[in-house]
Length: 372
Image 1 (cartoon, one colour):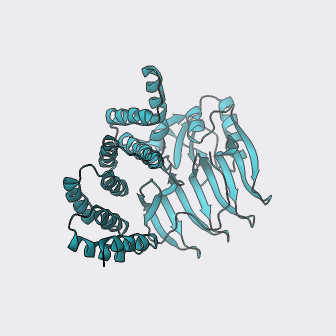
Image 2 (cartoon, helix red, strand yellow; image 1 turned 45 degrees about the horizontal axis):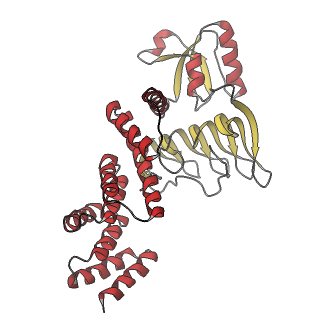
């Protein structure tokens, strides 16, 4: 069979997601034409999709020696490094692509979007490691790719806000809150009760507030130990109560008229304490919502059985927030996992649960809610 026909077969098999047979066909081509660029590309892409990442990288590195101006090889490498969460190496691949150049405008726009996602994930990764200088460099790269031209002082202010938002990404389940006055205490208790919190003791000015179990109780300084104490205004900030002049309490309905959410909203989307509902009226999620879904609280099955309780992480790339730390339950109510979840991200940052295995990221029956 001629090489062109074999390449056509590769294309057909690829679009059928038949990656093993694509590799077999590529091997047949490479026996005849050892350095065929299209066959090398198909084989590398399919090895990556089959999660044979190291073999794919070896193949690509050798191909790049032969064809240093083939941007597609660098594009596959970038996807692999994104999958491995090695975002710094992925950025290097994107920089090589831009040096080589991409003639097709649609392809270039797509690569720029991928690059921006990679930069966001790398910035988050660096901030978590407190490597702020490197994060600052990536942040400037992000502004360049978006063609944003700001004064240096304005860029610094934007970066500070970005760091502040990301460093509170993994929030605590419990907060020790020091209240400034009896008046402030009355306001805080009113706010907590409006959002379903219960208390056995609220006589003092130092509270332990659990935002997942929705309890608050007076504690002594001795009970706090080495834990941080925050002010009530800082607590409001952590539960998405600011900016107060833009947040309102609303009931949101779906296209069928069913109630899908009630609670605090920002830009007409869930933000802060709230409750989301299934179509049957049972609670879907309750807790603190953010720009991509819930970040702290509880999720239930349509039957009403608790599914997960704990914290979600704010997804920096595409996709919703993912469970980060907590307890997962089966539909029968059995505890199937407790602790930190192992999350991997696809080429565009979509979160995928690796552990506990078989625990879907989201439920099929979930209500359709638009997040900002």
